[in-house]
Image 1 (tube, one colour):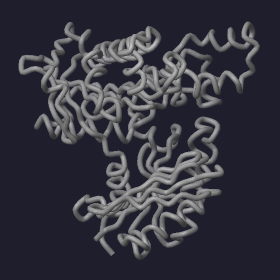
Image 2 (cartoon, rainbow, N blue to C red):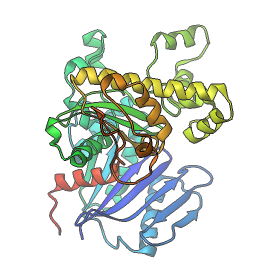
Image 3 (cartoon, one colour):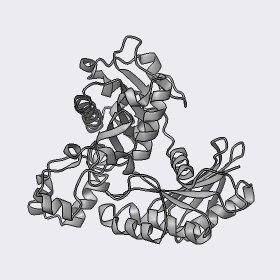
Length: 398
């Protein structure tokens, strides 16, 4: 057994998965929620057993990991230190282009990038610090959301700002969800039985956070998120792209300060701002009940995705496949149909029966005569992080 523990630390949560990299199987997984709040909870899952659920206050990430390790002691699966620990880190800036073994210098560089991802990197750092303290002799590996997109050419990542200012403040398009986009691109190529280096793909990671990537020959040449995860497509609570002048207008005419505007755009906009909910299942239910705001919100959501697919087809020069993934992309047949309905000009034709069939396996949902293949590929970011972690530490069993 080669046990690799994957930690995905959020500001108030800790998602984890233990994988046996001998056969890529999941030994256990779970989620610690509401860290730092009055009432928290741990849900721990092992194959073939009922979930272990433990309520109770969890003051910090250190306590959260203690709870996780205690759950392992009760259920088995991790009785000693893992072979390695892989950490999702949201922002690697322009410094990290691949998985990196964490030492004091690397941790300090990640800390210096906090201004670029103030909602994400501090939690990722907390997860790393806790794991280093618990397992001082175990390699800790940072796997960056931004790394997959470092191949973008300058004409895709540069903003039209004064160069000196942009360079000094590191203002550029970085992109996110890179582990997901990379994983589903490779999985799509395997499903199609075609070499990845010969494919032009648009990958759509659609969940509470949404992003698109143009993938040419396995490399990201453009992506919808930018300096931060706020840009691009409409999301659950994030606005996505908007006229930058709106920020100044909200300040001058609305009387909102910058912190309030930041909260508005990140936590109160998107589908929540348009339809009153960031759960697309609720938005569908409202639209079906005749709510015009919900119906319009769905139209806006799908229209922006469709326009991005068209733009990326132009950037790629051709389009072989559109790949849907993540919570909405994998499970919402209506969204897939709406997005693809306007892409007939590119040669996209979806088969209604295939689109509405459910499966946890990669599958084709386009019609047999479609010039562009449309796929649904379940993402597995934890496996991707574990694979990259194992690769960077050598992959040899103890």
